[in-house]
Amino acid sequence: MDKITYIFFLLTLFSASAGFCQTVISGNVENEKGEGLSGATIIISRNSNTAILAYGISGLNGEFQINVDSSSDSLFLKASYLGYKTLTKILQNNDQQLEVKLSPSSEELQEVLVEG
Image (cartoon, rainbow, N blue to C red; front, side, top):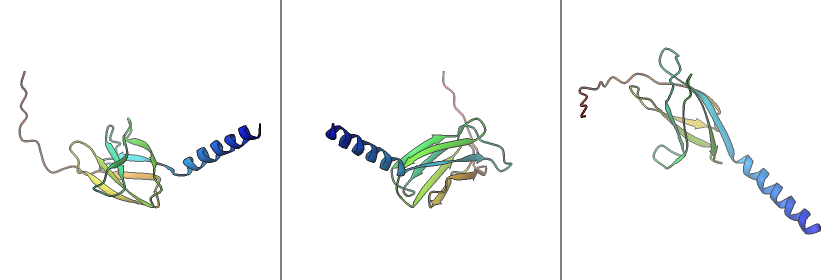
């Protein structure tokens, strides 16, 4: 019985410590008029050129929520949406509630080719 109690204690300790490393980053992705952008891609990484730690897609009103397993003090958020400039932002001290505003891209599609 004493061995079972010890194992239960260790499992509880490890599961509790794993929860401390997880951060929830949430917010809204909006255009320049403050309207939510549905389907925007949000990527979280340790710096602007490293592997992706977590990613998500904004909901119907531009809202998103991403769980990140990281103990890093600063993370990078990259948000993109078709027809808008990609925004890269440094998250200090794991900012957790964000307002991400994307501005329209000045580049326009010149030609569309549809083959059938």
